[in-house]
Amino acid sequence: MFRRKIYEKLLEWKKESDGNTALLIEGARRVGKSTIAEEFAKNEYESYILIDFSIASKTVTELFEDISNLDYIFLQLQMQYKTDLIERKSLIIFDEVQRCPLARQAIKHLVKDHRYDYIETGSLISIRKNVKDIVIPSEERKLSMYPMDYEEFMWALQDTTSFPLLRKLYDMKMPVGQQMNRKLMREFRLYMLVGGMPQAVNEYIRTNNFKMVDRVKRDILNLYKDDFMKIDPSGRASMLFDAIPSQLNTNASRYQISNVLGGSVRSEDMLSLIAEMKDSKTILISYLANDPNAGMSANKDLSRFKMFVCDTGLFTTLMFKDRDFTENIIYEKLLNDKLNANLGYLYKNVIAQILTANGDELFYHTFLNPSSRHNYEIDFLITRKNKICPLEIKSSGYKKHASLDRFSEKYSARILDKYLIYTKDYAKDQDVICLPVYMTPFL
Image (tube, rainbow, N blue to C red; front, side, top):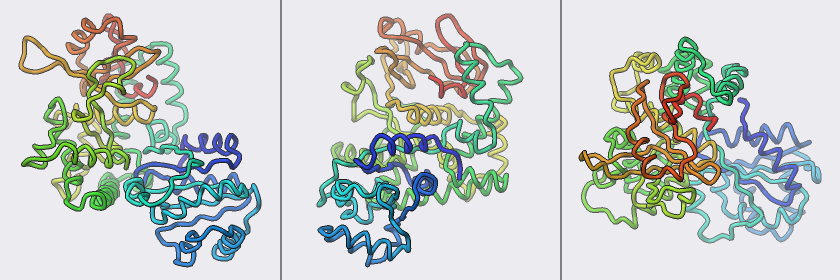
């Protein structure tokens, strides 16, 4: 069981809610929702029952078809799971709740009864399909769970000191030194390769073998493809997912759906499909901000977007899916920054993952370059203190930032700070903050 930051949020919910709301933990498959829910139950309650609806008996699932007698339901659950429930001291977990929509609907009445606490987990890609005929409980609080972030990854590797020290250096606006930067970049690239899926992290710690880690990640990717088939049996969602690395590698101003699917596609159908994929949290979407300001959500262009994978470790495996496995030599070259490839899109994916975990919505902006056929592009825009901070991402140590400069000329009054995210040490280039990628979590 790895230490996860969401545990503190579960404690806050338990204290603040006091049984007046249930908690739905949202997240992609294999991010650790069930594990954290059960660990929380073991530590914070005198007893608990975990109902895994993917394997629950018909006797259990049929209990939720008629909830008029809660005493009977609780008695049956205690008998089926051989666990005593204690009023206000027990937790009931509805795991894979999408497989039993009536159990989710029952939350309204279970919470009102107030005897026990309730946590739900499940795959959102299926939840959406299974709620058409039920009443979604307003007593349900939602909490997003993501793959392990960089600090959680360092915790898993028994390093609890580096991240706080990095934060101090960031706050002091101090470089770490050339030798230390090389070490930190290598450690961060390790995170990019392994990723934040707990199973992959555990496999790396257990075997120290990238081939074995890659095998775990491919299994997870196959699970995602199976899920995509549930929302789109035609296979279009899977095709869109598989094409993420190649689409980012083209440096186009948006995801070119027609290039992936071919032929004519109805934009309405595609927008609906993309929304379902986004809700599953297996992908991250960055929308074009037509008017870059603090209220970007109000003027985003839903038809122009870039797509990223929720976990950069999975993204790395997806990059090399043309092989049966991603050879250790490829991992070693990536780790040592010696692979002959433009890895800018790999770094953009990890920045998208970091910003999302920090609670930022993803936006980018393009604008005309009058002296070239190519537009200027700001990779990401985030809001701070009612102003915007443009981010330009580099997979190298180059300090060129033409897009940032032109953007600043155009929108100077709207900008708080501007950042070049790259692989070298902390520095300032006039008014541009050059930030090593491993300090991005502090933005």
